Length: 194
Image (cartoon, rainbow, N blue to C red; front, side):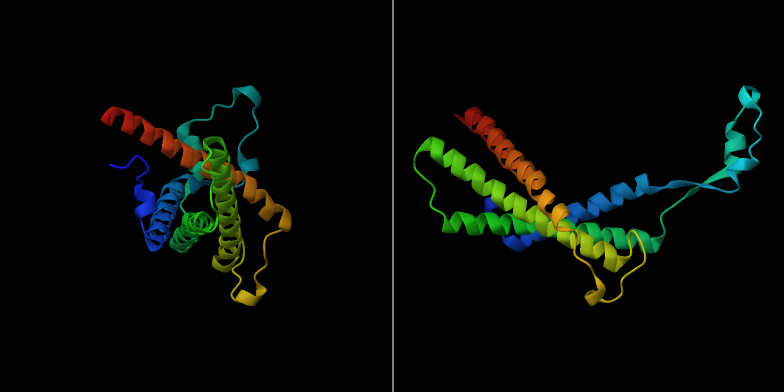
């Protein structure tokens, strides 16, 4: 087994987009459980104000509140939104990384190679994060996740420049940590084989 052999580098770009989409779907499904809300059945002011002597029991609270589950429309919109955003994040990261690697010659000097490689990973991660941010922002509007649904593409608004620029360093750091974490895990496996 080659020390630099990486299953992720062998995977095709469509596989990366699909894996990102599946990761996003998992994210959406798991987070739906966290989106249940307590909904007030009656006015909170109806609870007697007896100071410290008022005893709130589970039965009293259950009579006043009930769990409100996300609707099926919201659940499916969330599933599609997260799948699309994660597919763009991971697919565009791998696409950008491969394009940069094929067009940039890295130095043979070990120190310069590490710095150049980290900069390349950083750039690819930052660009992917910005693309995901824009995709997420547009799909939220089109699917009506956090407000009224925008039914025409021409009425969708882009995210602010500030929020798009802030997506770069956050994702850049995340992907550098991911790539170097992967290298550390492979280094441990390679020392076990030797």
